[in-house]
Image (tube, rainbow, N blue to C red; front, side, top):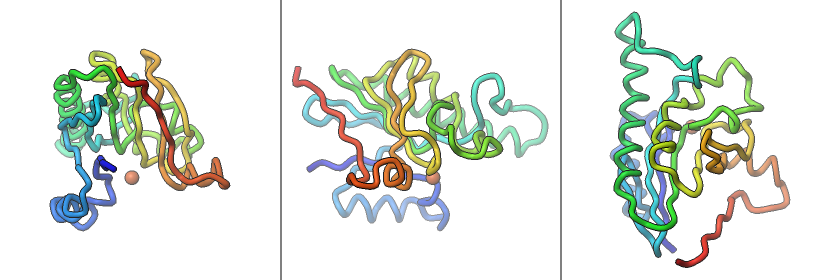
Length: 180
Ligand SMILES: [Fe+2]
């Protein structure tokens, strides 16, 4: 079975994300970082994403250099997602992220940390290049489902959240596509 993934912030903690990527690649996992793959007619665009907050309350690139760098990291991740989405020519399309592109699926977390769980800057490319479904993780105490402003279903598939939401089911979500 093909396995496609994006790295998360934990994969960066060691300071050697390329080593993590290589270990996973050697195990047969395709790691996406601003690129896209097509599997059986389903296109998947993936990027880790970054934090920064949502809507008009998102952090802006103003003031200290550290703040500008922080916001720029989110903007670069959004551009990588846009580039990956632009490559997809398939009838069915999936966006894979670690951080959340919408506020809905971080609801349930302490409001003080919403801005560290993702950013709507990652939602903008999904408006220009719509997909069928978006998956993300990171918000372990968030909500399982939400929608982008253009009504794309967004699923928070953080394992602890799935385990808590459906303790009797395996901790994954299945999305089916009809063959074109
Ligand atoms: Fe995370």
